[in-house]
Image (cartoon, rainbow, N blue to C red):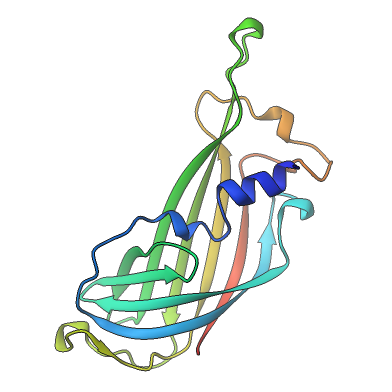
Length: 184
């Protein structure tokens, strides 16, 4: 299996499936959204960056909190600013790409992936404190999705930098996507 597929499977894009499983709490269910992510910038190299893709996510609001739950993963919580109608969801995960080998003094390679989603609703959003476990047809949203790849401190990931389809153009590197979310 090539490095790109391995990384995408081990740190699945979107990574948000790793967010944990918070207890369901009352709030305003905004519903299910179809989200289209379109690449706008990247330094990882074209072989490591998808041009665009789509996924589905269920959104729920509580005072100061947004719950982002992809249909294929566990819910993840982020921050929500009611006045600005803005939210942020952050995650970080790591995976060992190459094991350490003390016989040749190789520390191994552990790749770290940090994901940040910044979004803003394009219409009114109800005040979560005024609702209790109700459903509201949520407005569309737009935003950015940034993915940063870097070796963990002490790792040697130089073997994964290069021009082949299984390598990054540089490390650390990042990819940014524009997000457009439409309520289904």
